[in-house]
Image 1 (cartoon, rainbow, N blue to C red):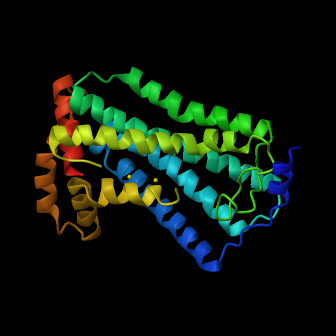
Image 2: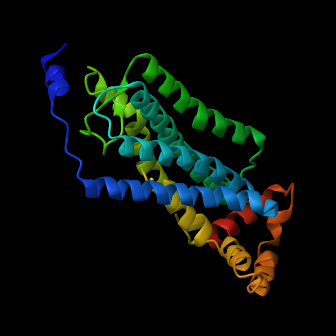
Length: 273
């Protein structure tokens, strides 16, 4: 084992202060609740299940798993590589990587439909599924099989398990299990959303608060969803606003819209967010 690896393996754990743990745990809870609200609104109102929101559903599911795995890791406060440390590290690796892929998939979909006006059939959705679930799964299985997931002494995390720092090729696996896709997302997403913004004068956020951020953007800041939630909570007080919103968003109820109509609907929904 290289000398540098031995030093890394004997490096004392980084102290994680209680206040830091509380902040991360609260962030995980908010992310979980936000993602749950996105899933709830998708299940509650079938007429609003457009393709962009279908993609957002898959992103929310990944964020749910990510928030739960991080919450368990911080709460458990691991001090060595154990079976539940490896399991938690594997789940957080898979879900967090998948979350980045689905975030980029949504951006690509919006760009293709709004800016390019290109047709988007089931083939594109299948491609998104293969990339956003398949690639993270293969990476995670390989990392676990090669024993790259384990205790990291909080030197590269805040209490949870991730890449085992005793691995000689730890930097490579840090890239493969998250950082590479995170960096790509930070580069690709601004470019795509700037292009979309130029097209419709509008634009558009991830670790432990992905679900909360998505909830704010696509539930609380989306007029038709916000109106329906308020209407449900206030026993119909906002029924008139809801009807107006339904008329404005009426195009979303078409089960099989034409290509041009689909692009216009996607553009209208993105603008309303």
